[in-house]
Image (cartoon, rainbow, N blue to C red):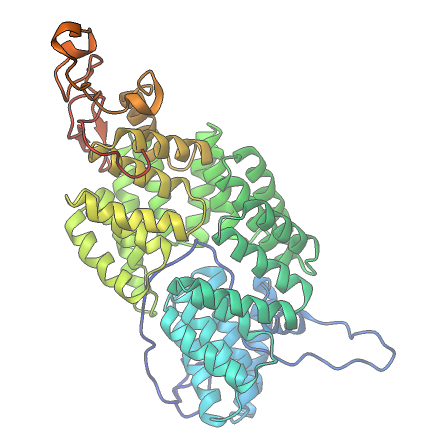
Length: 530
């Protein structure tokens, strides 16, 4: 910070206000979307675009909401900072600089860039309060990477109102509406982008929306096209990473690994692909390589999500001191990022539910869900409620997450495990089995627990759905024709196939047994999903 209070040099400090914080939604390594629209050099007159240097490439990428390489971003930031020292009233350059700070902070997980970005963007608005959609779009992008989706919606809608034909605001609005769980608004923003935007941006956002709706094949087609249309190595890496994530979610770690490695070949600084590589290698049993990839990702981009994943991998390997070290790092990192306005309440809530205090997790996640009811937060809160003893309330939220969100192995596992603890064994068998079919590698700890639960549940009773619950005795026959059948010798509400499910684990590392001691459920009306 320069002595004059500006983000980089001699300019009077602007109005400083912290943007409100909200929930985490979505996946680690998200690319900044909808960054401020910027001007690129004019044509040279011969019909060919001018050759762009590093700063020009970064300016074009930031203006299109596309990823830029770290060296190009550094060049753009240095150039704009130098320009603004000589021209501190240039509102457009302040907007460009602020958006470049946002992009660099997101690429490096360096939260210190976010206050600088906010100050630069607010300086642009102060210099030009009206008709400044560039700064407003930059503020929307900043709020999204801070996981403050209410603020992102506010800034993005202001920008769209000022310049409804400027396509670059719509990716930021899609991210904001997704974080808020507003599927209808997501659809409208996507329609506007499809009408106005260029093919790479349209394909990317279309694929992400399709993925969130559970349309995997359509999402894969759109994201594969987006990767093929990429114009820079950084954009290519981001596109390949997204396709790799889809392969991972389908339970195809070998294919996912190929995409992650291709992404790293295009851009070695794409740290999200390093973490993805670690995840895929662990699923393939290449543990030493997996640990190395995770450590490399954390060293370069220390996101709390990566610390949680690595900690759970260590725990699955019985390396508990190493796991505790990662969990301590997670807590410290969340605290540090909060200084930059970043909200990690969902990640912290899930961690506390599984490894800490479920009741504290409920309090934290309930506040998050009240602000932003997206499927990811609904699932996290439902799981925490279950672990704190309120399985029925938890099941309602997890069921809603499965209905409204992507096709997720974790969502299905959470639902099935809650149903198992409630004694709804038919539904539990179906949903835990579904989780393992969707992705049999979705979590190094939860997969093991899911397999133990399926073994405890055993095979469905013979006879299909009619035998899911205790048989109903027939009406008494006339005295002359009455006879005793073997089934009538079985007391009502019991079963001839009584076995005790094995002990399983719900909260990480904490054994528990189902509430019902028999495999068949007591006689009652069928539960949902049975």
